[in-house]
View 1 (cartoon, rainbow, N blue to C red):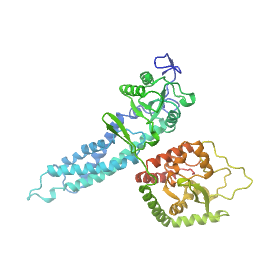
View 2: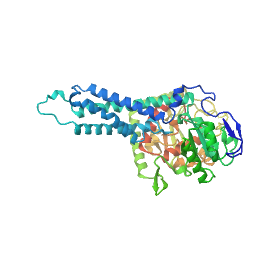
View 3: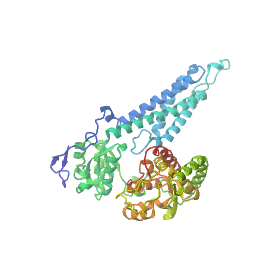
View 4: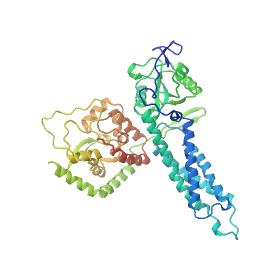
Length: 507
């Protein structure tokens, strides 16, 4: 690959530089067929093909499951309408569009809704097209449309999401093992471009790999992280051809909007998918959408009010669920309490000051998992950039403490905190006051996570940010949760928590 020399524009002389792509930089070589399926159009073609297989299998199984002769009166033939109708409904829900962060959990409800709607539409068409039975026809030779389509619906409700889940699992496996990714150019520099490059390196699930940066002036080597610099956005055609890029991401920069628009249009003309990071990115949530006033696009921002009635209902629900949860797990709760009591001298519960909603201090409860500290032991120091947590300093865990921490059972007493109203089931994990004061000075938007109640589990924790992990990443995930809160997101986090606690880790 060739890139312009540092500090030059698009018309400057080129010098050779090694290619920057995920494949071929120390990663195993993937099968060639998998490279074609990493993005559109092959990505969508594969998804459509899997849906056709699942829907066709549902129709066949539905016909097989009915006890009568479904070939009578062409009902079997008409039932195949379900397949194209389902594809059309799924397409209308944008379920064939490649999305960077969309997961199986995001698609599950729209898929099930689409299957149900398609079943009703196909059945209505069948009833309208097939005339009623004549009086002299044998009742046993006819299957009611409702009987057949209910069974088609049941089979499709299982098969369609199941095949999509298998596809997502295979895709995730290949992305993580081989780092199969679409080559991405970035227009812009500074902390945001640096963060994007870092995230692409850290999270192969997104399917993007940075191959070049364009901006008005050359970013520092620290910002580039080894990614080549190609000059100004006017060099987009040179950069795209040199890197064989498939994606362009435009981040806020000091360059004129007209120059950025020209670069984006040129990239689209070269066949690149263009994505734009909005200047007001902190205010943009998942529910934001675009309207038009004449020919002017206007973004409508969705607002989540932590003081509103939605969160009041959430907190009431949390208390009810916590009370029922304590009742259900009471045998386990009492057993753990006895094991803690007899494992070493000391109290059963360990209470620690933590910061909750609006900066209020509360006592966060856990089962005690450690012996008393040695007064002569050296003080623990948090690793720079990381959150406190896990085993801090000398390992004083008891045998039952090790088990509880590995399985997160030591967190169960926090259901009492939820019952008291100090915490929520889902929310940002609470931190100690001394660290909160430090992190608010060091970490951008860290204090904004205290807009809501702290949680037993959270969006950051189900993404692996437990124990001594990046506090900046935690703040980013916590604020995303707050600004995009919904009942569905809470349910998703609770389901993912079950999977997360199966992996060793401490908070």
